[in-house]
Image (tube, helix red, strand yellow):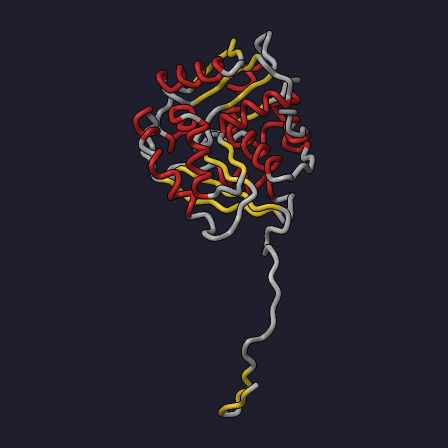
Length: 263
């Protein structure tokens, strides 16, 4: 202790460290620069999970979603992931673009994130959707997207090549991600229910991280009697389970009562 000009000064005070606001888990999220939805939906889900921290960084992308604009993100995935609390370990990292995960390949996207955060378990929306369908014991899905035709054909082929069937499909055919983020919850619910009512469908998957569905999932399930998930909804569940957070959250629908399926 020193004293100068009548001021008592105490320096080098002792302190201890913990994991800050993330004693249970730290999750990182790469978000598209044009996305209006994913952080909002994820924070709604994580609100009831104290000690689970979400940190995000934005990656530049053209808001008009085409295969070329999606491919242009590849060299930016690693440096954007590196912006997530540099020097701090993460339990899970997630990439917030369904269509880019398919155009680039989910394995490639996860590898790029793991170059920046090798300790973290990685996921993408399409990875999470596939694993969610396994957890829900669903094989035949009704698929709803906002995409234009060439992107739609890519997602159907991608899912079918990985053992899922898509006997029912619908799209808003809107390439502008800004408009997709402003589609009303009622519009999404009506479209999801219309597709999900078709016979021979086990579940509904709504693709695109800009679409708002998480808060409506349980309501749609009650109407259909079938499980419903979306890119944001499935990936939030998957990231939590990868990070070791298994708390059931039935308010967000059937998926959020499920553990990870056996590998």
